[in-house]
Amino acid sequence: MTIYFVTNGINRMAGTERVIVQLAQALEDVIILVPGSEQCAFSGCENLNIQSLEVGEFPTHNKLAKIIHRLNYFRKLKSILKRNDTVVSFSFDLNLVNIKLSKILNYTPIVCEHIEYNYHKGIRNLIRKKFYSQDTVTLVCLTETDKRKFLNDGIRTLVIPNFIHPLDSKYNSESKKILSIGRLEFQKNFAFLIEAFHLSKIYENGWVLDIVGEGSEQKELEEKIKLLNMNEFIRIHPFTKNISKYYQDSALMCMTSRFEAFPMVLLEAMNNSLPVLVSDFPTGAREILGEGNTQIVSDYTPGAFAKLLASFCLDEDLRRTLSKQNSELIRKYYPEQIIQSWKELLEHTSKE
View (tube, helix red, strand yellow):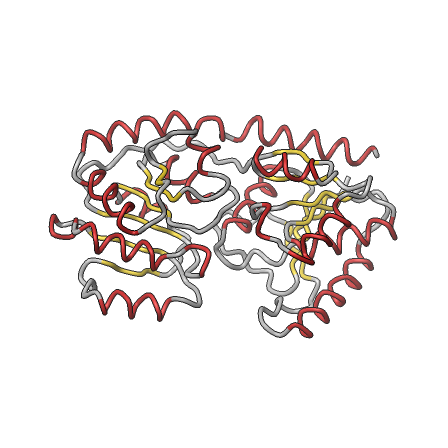
């Protein structure tokens, strides 16, 4: 059985790309199809089978260019796939391509949603319902919350969360570094975090904020840091393959996202025994941390976040307690059972 992962590439550091790489490493006979560059942004990719369709990187702005790119992707994919191949896709547009090709080539498609249900609205949501609800399609989502919504749309849905490999980590309680990681884009709302850090005044006690990421909002965020006179205390670093050093050097990880599905950054922080402080985005945080967890900030205002941030930073005993708690919570996302769920799905799909 040949398993194809149909992707937008794995040459940038983001959550979905990381999941694709980890899953391919855990399974056998996986071919990762990418549109352009075969470069991998993560370590451990040396033994992966990465093949380029040679249609170029996906354009992010011009609508006509996007349509042409997807048509070229479709044609190239059609020339590669064979009947009874197992094809897994990881984004909305490519899910549609996967489903359409499955009708022509007679295979059973697996489509994955790595963004929360309500992200796609209007016409995109109607298209999603029409395509995903077809009898042969199996949808894999990340949370029970989203599963209920997809089932309500008549879509055959399974929950298989992201997994993470266990670490022998030790909490650095003496650190005064706050960490936040992600693309510098609207979704992650780093401007909110910068404002909250400034309002908390914990920099007066020697605390600093390290933001690791790249994106279109970087200049705007740097200007905000300068305007607040926070250059000495807030630093923006580029993505790195050696992200573990930031986790190990930090005392607390913060997320102020407007929305998430199932954030790998949150899993990684907990896996490194870090206490966390996260916004109450629609899915993910509550399922990972549990309802009523004090690390989830329900009041989505900079002032409320700042107040909790200060209380966490100034209470070492609290942080130690949360560190131990997160080290236990993360165990349910260790690989064994999650990989087994994928193997069972792939085997079942190959027999349909």
